[in-house]
Amino acid sequence: MNSALIPWLKKIFNSRFWALVQKEVNQILRNKQLIILLIFPPTIQLLIYGYALNPDVHNIKLGIIDYAHTKVSRELIAALTENRIFSDQKYFLREANLAAEVETGGVTVGLIIPPNLSRNMAQDKPTEIQVFIDGVDANQAGIASGYMNQIFSQFNLQLTGNLTPPLINPQAIFLYNPGLRSSWFFVPGVLGIVLTLISSLTSSVTVVKEKDLGTLEQLLMTPAIAWEILLAKITPLFVLLLGDVVLALSIGKIVFQVPFQGNLFLFFLLSGIYLFVGISIGIMLATLCRTQQQVVLTSFFINLPMIQLSGAIAPIESMPDFFQFISLFDPLRHYVAITRGILLKGVGLEVLFPHAIALILFATVLMSVSVYRFRSQLS
Image (tube, rainbow, N blue to C red):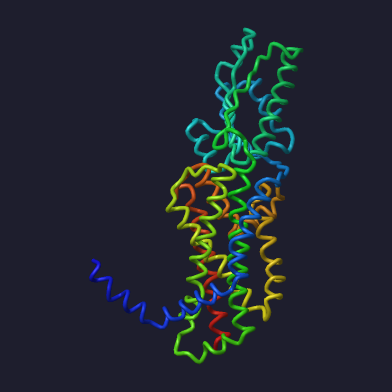
């Protein structure tokens, strides 16, 4: 096998493509501003956002298993869903289905009402009601837990006329984030934000700088093909940006103790696909702008809406329905769901498959458009 690889490696190392890659690497190493941009902003942003962000949430998705099917159980459900804190209640017949829905993010809070509710109430016996809360978003989980405790207290007051003894005792279990640490929610989201900003800015600035220095015109005089020139630019940036992924994961683990429950290879594979999305956006910006200043200013019109609609800072459920629909066309939303799913929940491709397909589609379309525009400019 090694003997079969040697001719291929020699062919690559003696090719025009490898010469272009060496030129790009040397250019990047001489650009101290680019190296600083790759290291310091991700570190500072992760530290600041991880400690500082604290959004409000609404429209928590509620999953229900009602084994009792009595007037009291229906009144309890109505008390939980009468305002905008809990919404989109879904009913399940089996606990396994409810647990699967919590795992995939379709339900944030699961409520299981036991069949002996009415019988215990008739005998003035307390009844324990199981509550499962997705703790990935600690702020949302805390609000859900606090609100449910208030509702159960008011409901007990209506049933007994006093606060003691309570006839209904909620037993809450926080999944995926038992300590309700807000940083566990924010750090995976900020990782996506950092990769978006860094990948789009570095790739766009690199290409625009070639225009400013006039070296892009010099490349036209070489025998290299357009795709070789572009691939030579993308390859070193891609490797450096993978280093940013490792840096962000290290900061999240060491500083914020964010767990890593899932598959490491799957995480880096999907992160690599998302890096191509960011690089494609950057190359497209470079083909639209003439100077580095224009690139930076134009990127704000693209990156900021992507960040706001991604769910990295505030839950998507808190947004109006229109913006929730628009967010489906935001690649960062899908990557944030992937990072939280792998890091905190430990889910695999069977759960993340829709998000992975979305990233592949975004990367394919955006890279195709950016390559087409880059080739048209070279011609």
